[in-house]
Length: 187
Image 1 (cartoon, rainbow, N blue to C red):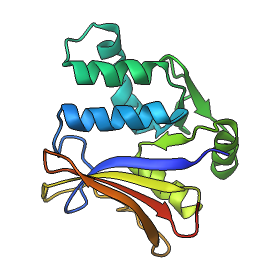
Image 2: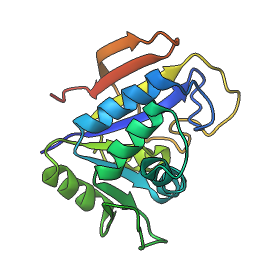
Image 3: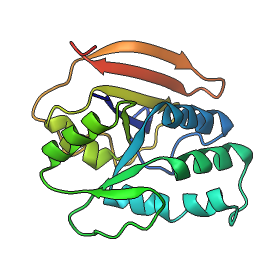
Image 4: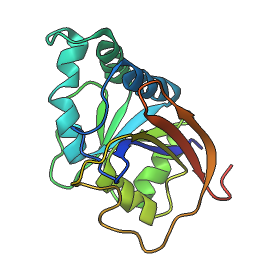
């Protein structure tokens, strides 16, 4: 069974707005490496639509972008992508499929089917999957920024606190810290 790894950019005050934080070659290289190490991506519909509106155009060369962004986009283009949605069932982006049925059952099946693991990149969906006890690892890029607004990590709340084991914390040259945590008691 593959691991479900939640990965996202977060500011010091917990903001997960994609427009906050440091966006540079180093942060893109980090996420490209994570994606290459994973077998698939998992998003909620909102995040999927945000990604779908830009990254396929970068991958195809229709949008001029720096090399680090093109590398992320072309890596993402080839990966299987899964979307959780109750309002949309047509996902035309290459290698994209909708997860259907009970959320817990569908994600457990996905973890079973993807031995290299699944990278989760949606904050609201992460809250729901964490409530179900399905997230195995957390890979956060913590940015040296105080955004002063939301959305924030887990703003919809969890029924109880999550205790995590630190696997690693590595500072980047841009001041961002790449953190890696595992659920307590999880290999």
